[in-house]
Amino acid sequence: MVRRGPVGLALALVAIAVVLTWAELAIAALTVCLNETPDLASGLRAQFPASDATARWLLAFLTPLGVSAGPTPVCDVAAPARAMAVAGLAYVAGICILDLGNVPRLLSWPVVIGVAIVARVALLFVPGLLSSDIIDYATHGRVASLHAANPYVLTPSQFPSDPFANLGAWPTTVTVYGPLWTRVDTVLTGILANASLAEITFAYKLLATAADVVSACLIVWIVMRWGRLGVTRVAPVVAAAMWLWNPLVNVELIGNAHNEAVMLTLVLLAFALLTLALTGTARHWLWPAALLSLWLGALIKFVPLAIGAVVALVWLRRGAARGVRSVAALIVIMIIVSLIVAAPWLDSPAIAAPVVGLANGGQRFKDVWQDAPAAWLTVRVVPLLGVPDDPATLRMDVARLIVWSVTRALFLAYLIGEGWLLWRSARGPVDATLRSIATGSMRLLLLALLLYTSQVYAWYFLWPLPMACLLGPRNVWSRAVVVFGLTFLPAFYLREFAPYGVFEMPRYAELALAVLAATWLGARVVTARGQSRLRVMAAGPT
Image (cartoon, rainbow, N blue to C red):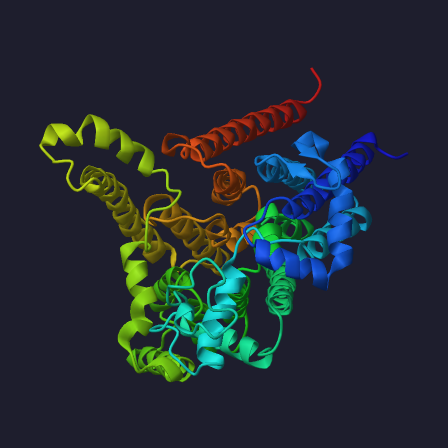
């Protein structure tokens, strides 16, 4: 006899998959109306006319989001945010159903992979981009490849004869990425020197999609190994869905092709090497190999340095470093790799600017919740301190200094506590060690976004997501990573197309905290009911 529970869950999963697919297609189709790259959109329309025609056809089914279809479609500025919110809700519901474990694998895997493929195809051939970063990658790459100049010193706009010179959002700014990514930009734009902007864009998107597929495979492999070791309780299909279905992954890595795609692949490769280091026979070289993988990721964008610090601390504490010589050899290798990668641009110390930006927490203030209390202090408190209003930004600068001093002091206190916890647990069993590295890295990156960085973009919440997928939705910090990312995504793009007041920016964090509190209480209730049933069963019939 077939149980109703699994059948009901299977039907619910299929229904949720349909809603999620509709939302992902909506996000892609809405870029016909709303995007940040209108010049590129016209090129993509000429390059992929079927994609543009399909998107315009889909707009007729998006009226609930605020779309008026027709020869000249009109889209409400909040439509993308609404579609992202629907996708986020469907994603959470789908993960919850999959995590119950009652859906047959013969159904769950095809549904997860099927939705992932549809979403990736739609966002790979998206008619417009929600971020112009790809264009900035290309313009800075051409500075190095076609003009043989240093992109850390000279800007694209300084080469007016180049048709790409004034494209993108930052034509008058030098590159802010690490030398490994600049190498990628240089090679790609050098190979495609005569390509159109649409062709170069598609090349970057193919690279990001390839990295995304590798990341998904690494997540499944690691989770399978960790499950046998007792590190995690998450099923491989759940971990895969946490990555493949996540709207943040699909929008930012496939749709916008941010360089986080390659960076996070290197992070996951490091975790795969760590798994082998703690379970295999050739352990002595796998720890340095994992750290080297993280170092390569940091040469794209500084983020993996944080994870590298966690791994290095545990490595040293466990005695796996094998003395000063091993540490010195690893440092020498990292220096040599860095010099080789950065060789063409070492003529200027400006290549270190990204690291300086890290120390400052960012180049500017953007979309951070701290600006809301800072704005309140600017009006209510700072004038009482005798701070003049000339220049006009002085009071806000003082208010920001007060707020950021508090949040960064809290972050520093957290770092001390995290280091102490890692040091204490580093010599534990294999499962506890891997779990502490993943949890510590995830917690560090999430709290850095909330307490330290002065500029936050939607794709930054991808940084801790690989560790969240490895530990699964039952881990409280994994849930925090997912929920903060999903609430910030629509808030960010709503502000991009319909700017709203600074006092509204913290709403995403308030919503995230409310959702996390509700899930915590729900988990407590479910656990209490389960324990009550077990006690009744143990007592037997009365």
